[in-house]
Image (cartoon, rainbow over all chains, first blue to last red; front, side, top):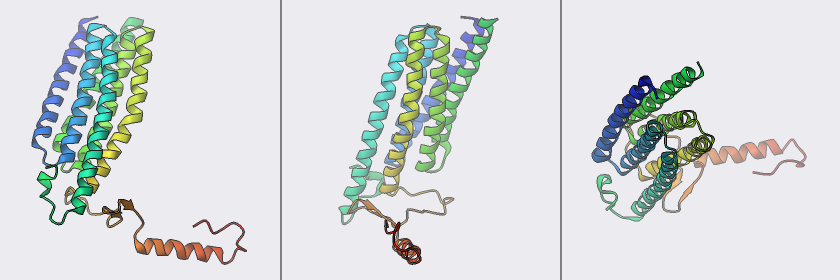
Length: 106
Length: 147
């Protein structure tokens, strides 16, 4: 691997680190439940990208399998979270005085 | 020569993939409401991940991981729209406030959350039925009446 490609991969690591930090900030800040799910989905995708960069940097194909499994798990978890949010919405529709939206999930 | 070309393609793919992942993150941080954030994360994120999968498929230089990487691209392209659609529907059903710049809501009043159904508004349904009956009158009733 040449120095140019190595430097590019380092640059990619830096960009993914910034992306992860920003997504983590959105996950903490919120303000609502769907924002956090979107942030979590994006963080999982950033982790997939990191696994792929690792596969390129190390030349090992094991990390491709890691990325595939992470894609599968992140899809299933996003679907589960979305179903949960819909369930919360249905429950709120049945309640007389639903709690404020910031605390919709408790 | 070939090695140089492959490396150039790899550099471009890695930079573009990481850059689109970063753009997705910036969109998730900067856009004003959750539906817009979902839009940024799903489109730019899928593109970034797919470009990096392509980079791995080219860069490892073996057949087996390349096929797996292409399967990963197909998987991302199949699942991300479904996941983002589900998130968007859940966001809409939860009634998260939207940004004031969004002035129109075509689904307004169509969802009955208690009965868990989505239907056309009354005036649109009436217009549809009157149009159907108006279209049926001149014909002899041979092909109409599906409603």
